[in-house]
Amino acid sequence: MTFPTIPKHPSAAGIAASLAFGLALAGGAWTGNAWVLVGAAGIGLPLVAWLAAGPGRLLLGFSIWLFAVLGALILLQGHLPALVLSLLMLAGVWLIPMLLLPLVFARSFDEWIRR
Amino acid sequence: MMAVGIAYLLVLLAIGLYSLRASRDPGGYFLAGRSLGLVVAVLSTLASIMSGFVFVGGPGLFHRVGFGSLWIILSGSFTGALMCWVLAKPLFRISRRHGSLTLTEVLRNRFPGRWTALVTAIAIVIGVVGYLAVQLKALAVIASSALPFSSDAAVLTAVLVLVFYSAAGGNLAGVMTDVLQGVLMLWVSSFALVFAVQAWGDLPPLDSLYGSLPEGWLGPWGTVGPAMALGWFLVFALGSMAQPHVINRFMMIRDLSVLRWFPLLLASGMLVCGMIWISAGFTVRMLNAAGTLAAPSHPDEALPLFLAAVTPAWFWPLAYVGVVAAIMSTADSFAGVGSACLARDLPQLVGWRLRRPLAAGRIATVGLFSVAGFLAAGTDQLTAYLGVAAFGVFAACLGPVLILGLHWAGAGSVAAGVSVTGGLVAGLVLEWAVWSGRLTLPVPASLAALAVSLNLLLWVGLALKNTPAGSSTSAARDVVT
Image (tube, rainbow over the protein chains, first blue to last red):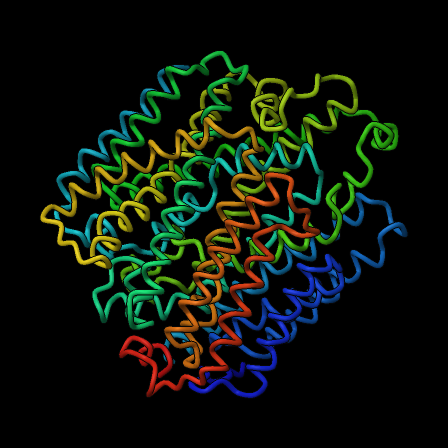
């Protein structure tokens, strides 16, 4: 598991990601565009943990996962029964992240606490 | 039935009396002696998070808007891990090394000067009053419910016990009672799910009920649509890291090593407690659709209706105590945070020296409950909407300075002050404009306010080009080195 360093002077990528998140949040709030909000969630939630030195590869995976699940819920609306989509939401946003992130936190705990 | 409630309140009174004797210094009163181990930390955090908002407001919101309401609690699956990654270490280290007892003091150590700390303290007091109002409103719903032992007298007794142990023992009493209350909440939520599943077995086929449900209610976005649902998701995912009554647990733990399994246990507990949201809200709406249960006169009555219609009579007193426990556990946590602001932070920031800080804290606790009582009595909003607004005040004001500001050395005092102030002003103005009907937003007002405060921190921080050497205190260096 790789860890980015805590940004004493934020890297260009860190600043760019932070600004993208801030603008996506503002754009989503102003327009109510669901895709912009999906983008904000996909960027923002992993970003905040990455800034605090969470495990990088996992958070990239989590970012892709959030994009995929939230995007699928929007795209599949009207194509699948509503209750099936709701169950997909529960599995994809609640149950799987509930197991994944805390377990990775526990596994990488020794390295996290040493830093 | 009364025996269960009386026994519960007697235990709380005993804890209050014990804490009154045990918490003889500000560290004991405001931070429970910095002694929390894993189990106590998890249960007290769980009990603080899961409140009347979840147990009363949640089923009501689910009944009204459907599955879309769940976006408020879905992020609970991973916010425990995010909180640990982002906040545990800086909060623990700054509070230990600099003797900070409150979140405001941590921020004052991180961002030199009074501006950020003063606005933070004001924002916390405003948010605490709002959240206490949510809890009192939820208690009022329980008092007026159809359950045979519900009454104004019973609720008034519960409130008096709550105010007594909160004022007497501060966060020490809050944490001790939270453990008992957390166990009760897990127990009640688990049984409620079992009874709900039994009731679902008696429903007619779902296809025959679709026509009786509002459009979109069964879908993942509910009747509110994707923008509002995703807005809730973002506000609660990020805002969870800005709730002072929750994150101050990281200042109370014995040491950082207790946190290894904290996220998994917290997420599991939140899943179990969150089930009450689905159990009651879904079941009551489906029974309404099937024509076997009259619709509640107000959505907040979904939970009492569920208990009365679906669960057996032997379960009622325990459920009642469990729901009251959820309400009381959050209220005592907020009372602790709010009284610390009023009795410690604000006097220090304006240069007052209180000779009896613990007595001031107790008086502040009573005052906070009194103001919150007036607010709760004066609004007809859904409990859940009131909760979203109070949650949003914290998210907008404190989210950016805690999430980014504790880690990004470029966030200087001016940027932090502008961000916190902008978040508070934007949050209050937008909430007022939306509630009064002067403005319609496609997302929660608190998300728009969060966007304002986040962008202010980023752009002002970049514009002023703060450097660690030029802008930070020793507390900032604790974080970035």
